Each structure stands twice: as structure tokens, then as C-alpha cells.
Length: 415
Ligand code: ADP
Image 1 (tube, rainbow, N blue to C red):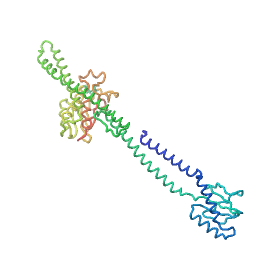
Image 2: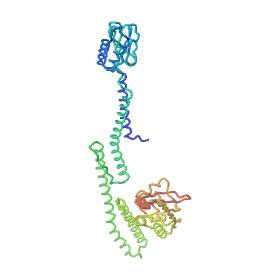
Image 3: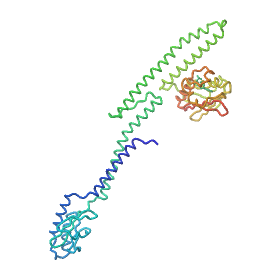
Image 4: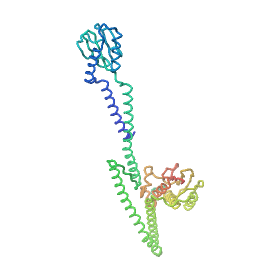
């Protein structure tokens, strides 16, 4: 399973955030209060002691005095008599101070430290700061911090990796043959640098490939005129003396002619980011016409397609030609299926193609070993078939025919 980069970065950030929040919370709860707080509490305990009525005063007076103080200070206060019995308290009563308490001191209680003060009359005063409202407030604050930081981090991480993903898709497009693939350079960082260098590389590749293609196309084009002259010369040769030589020459010239024709077609198709002429083509009529020429059987419903009729004719003819050439005079069948995508099947009962070669036969100039001698092709026919099918939104593949032979399956999209 692919681990998405943005998720990894984001989760790492989230982990750090949670750890940080947990440490913060632990420190908040566990670390003892500040020394300054202790001094303050001690002062408060002295104040409480001073504010207490005389030891023989009624309890209610003591309670009133404590209440008055506790109303002004956020603290829990407990007053006990010399024997440790409770006299008055504000907030939950604190436990009695240790019996050996002399003067004042800190007592560590489960909820945090408290200050204990022994008055001259033997009474004890215990003061503890009221708990700060940590619970829900702190938790909500932490949650809010977590959510906003996580959201912000997600946005930032997505922005960075989004650019990487766009870059990757363009690299894939270039790899798939779209030499015009470029990526927008966003920002001024390393990713932007990478995008810029990808663009430079793609530019260079496009130039190089373009040069090669135009060279091939130009050479093919230039070969046409001398070839035409040769054909003329062959025609003019008198056949009486060396008829077999004339026939061989004529065959060679025809072969060269076909090669140049296919080369030109291939380079035109390659160059063609611009789709050719599209018109409504009656595919059944086209297939039937071509099939008739090759003595093949055509069947299927009337099928109309938006496409380039010249290229489609070339596709059908190449398949029929191959079936005739390699099928060894077995019956050829061309069947159409008009559903979308349209499917054209051209089958023969020839020797078929070994399973290891099913894909390779569609490569330019590839010919099955041992079969090349059978035909006079140059190995561009099927590559053209595939290119034309792709130009029409479909593809071409080979299928072994049940019962022996080959079936070439071409799909085409209707519009
Ligand atoms: P070629 O110009 O050699 O015919 P293609 O691209 O048309 O080139 O075909 C490539 C190879 O695929 C051929 O050399 C042949 O070995 C094989 N092939 C094509 N069509 C058939 C078929 N109908 N039956 C068997 N083999 C085939």
C-alpha cells in the first residue's frame, strides 16, 4: 500500500503536537506551584490568623471572619482548635496539620500543598489556594489548539505535496509519450526548482525527438522522387531478356514504396497532437469495401463513427493485409460490434502469434522471428493500427483465436 507523503508529514506533525500537549498538561498538573504562591499563602495564613476573633469568641464569629476573607481570596481555609477539632472552614475542610507543627509550614496534601499556621493560642489555620479552573477550560483550550494546528498543518502539508503530485502526474504524462507535458512552476523553493528542471528536461527531449522525427519524415519524403523515377525505369525495362530480374526489381520498388508510405504515415501520426480531419464515417461500409478486396467476410450492424476515414481505412487494410499475408490463405473474417466503444475484430486461421509476442508485435519495426520471411512488410503495420485506434480514443490488441489463428481486436470511441 502506498503511504501518501502528505499523510506521513501530517501525522508526524500531529504526533508531535499531541506529545507537546500531553507534556504541557502533565507539567501543569504535576509540577508544584510556584514559590511565590507559597509566600502569598503564608501571608494569607498570617492574615487569617490576625483576623480571627479571640479564642473564646462564638464559632459563628470565627466563621463570619473566615467567610469575609475567603470571599476576597480564591482559597480554601480551615481553622481548628488546639486539639484539632474543626472550628470553621471556607471550602472543603482541610485535614488537621501534623501534631509537631511549630510556627508555620507546608503540608503536602493529595490535591496540592497547603500552608499551616499555628497561632499563639494553639489554634491552627490551614490555607490552600482554590484550584484554578483547569479541568474543562484547559481541556477545551488544548482541543482547540490541537484542532486549529492540525487543520493549519494539513493545509500547509497538502499545499506542498499537492505540487509534488501535480509534478508526478506530468512526469507520468511525459513518460506515456506526451512530450508537450509541462508543469506550472509555483513558488521559489526546492519543489519549484524541481518543476523548473523537469520543464527544461521535457523541453530538451521534445526538441530532440522532434529533430529525429522531422529527419525521418524529410528523408522519407525525399526518397519518394528517386523511387518514382526507379519505378518508371523498371516499367521501361524490356522484359524479354531478364523477366525475373524485372519482376524482382518491381517487387523491391513496391516494397520500398510501402515502407516509405508507412514511415510517412507514422511520422504524421506521431507529430499529430492535432487531430486529423474528423467526419462521420460509415464503418461497416468501409470494412465491407476493404474486405471485398481481400476476399474476406465482413459482418455487423451499421456503425457510424466520428473519425478520419483515410486513417480508418488504413487501419482496416493493414489488418486485412496481415491476415492475408500471415494467415496462409485461411478464411478471413471481419466483424463489427456497434456498442460504445465500437469493436472491430479481424480473424484468420493462420499460425497465430506466440504468447510472448502478443504485445511486442505492436512495436514499430518488430516482426516475429521466423515469420518475417513470410511477408514483405517492414514491421510498421500494427504499430500504425494501434496509433490510429488510439487517435480515435480506443486501442488495439491481439487475442489468440479459439480453435487456432489470430484475432486482432480494435476498439474505437464513437465520437
Ligand atoms: P509487418 O510489416 O511485418 O507485417 P506488422 O506490424 O503488420 O509488420 O506485424 C508485425 C508482426 O506481427 C509480423 O511480422 C507478424 O510476425 C505478426 N503478425 C501480424 N499479423 C499477423 C497475423 N494475422 N497472423 C500471424 N502473425 C501476424
